[in-house]
Length: 77
Image (cartoon, rainbow, N blue to C red):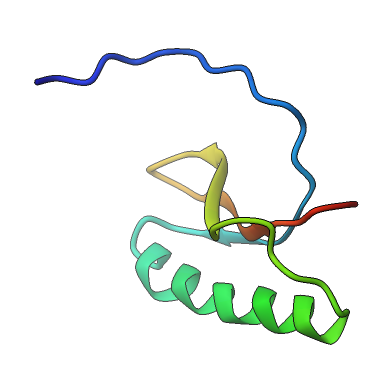
């Protein structure tokens, strides 16, 4: 079975993230280490994640640089 693309409207979700600028070559080495850093920041500020960690791709330029956010949803801004 092949999944079909669809548009899903969601309500706003506040989140905490670290933005990183990486290349395709450095993506796998840089991004996984940022989840623990975000989780540590949440703990130090007395906050808990309100869901699973995520990667958010803001800019994808496969030949140059990607702008990616590594974060967790939170209950309130």
